Image 1 (cartoon, rainbow, N blue to C red):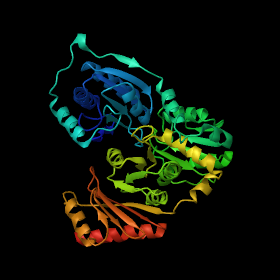
Image 2 (spheres, rainbow, N blue to C red):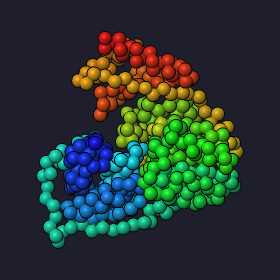
Image 3 (cartoon, one colour):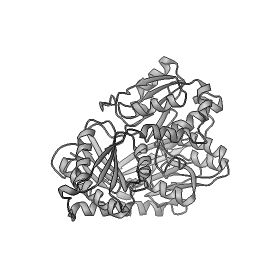
Image 4 (cartoon, helix red, strand yellow):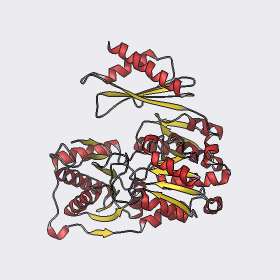
Length: 460
């Protein structure tokens, strides 16, 4: 069993012994700590809770909601929802914070508590550490019977979220309707099976082919929206002669597309395409993390904006976006963060803008993809001896490339003229992740292998 305690939340596999898996004991401990911390910080006793459709969701939700009641916190229960919908609901409800019950792209045996502040954004590094420390001491009182929190169930936020997207100046419902798209949706039997078709219908799409859209938590394939997991979607796009396919992860914050020929649009290019359209309408800056494609930089500079890189992690990207007043940002895993809606990855907002862009381009999705710079990535890792000083190893690599442009804000990223490599240590395993990007797949693989060989020399 596995239990991972990090600044952004608590995730683990369901069952096992307390402290070793995500058990009811652990759920109570961390929920109570977060509830006490965030309500005291915000000055009100209300928290929004929503969950994806995974098998353990109802059980975990019951424990979380009961625990919040037990510390005197009122709960706005959205029930089956999405991560971006909960992020929108927190400020709408004037709540102290939010808890999203989802393990994102992790398999069915996983679940997690993702923690939001009063702005509906992921809590900061400092706040996360404070919550974890409080969970270890449990230095607070539970409420007496006359001070228990109340539960308010609300099922209106699907409509509110869709209305917010329809109101965007970058979303043109009429253009989408006139394009008469035929779209296949793979929602991996989670809440996207409800939310995505509802959004598409609201956008005027009438030809919707639903694949794995029953929110029963029985994931028919690995829920991470990668090419190897989307073979059924690709096949159905070709079989139905659809214009495109849409895939999301269980909590609907990651978005990727399948082209009309059944091939992947590329999750790295979801953000690139959305940014392309937004920057045509409004000049501005963009942000992505250090492991994301260089294509976003190219597109940004094409329209006269400045591109900035942030450390990996949504909270880091959001912080940088606010700092540079970015008009669009996100992560290369299909995570689009569009401040005009809210500061969080939102597949639904991404769908609205992307379909508008595609409709107005008058092109097929594959033709649109061909208008963007072609980059290819390699993602590898090297396993290290437990106890090895990984920071010193990265320092040695930095010294080797001291005359080459590089960044150390998150591991080590080295920027060559046409290629880059990003080395990051894992927080949970004795490994270094090695990401490279180059104009061809062969060059990306070759660069990754070269860096691995150089690391092995240092270790020898």
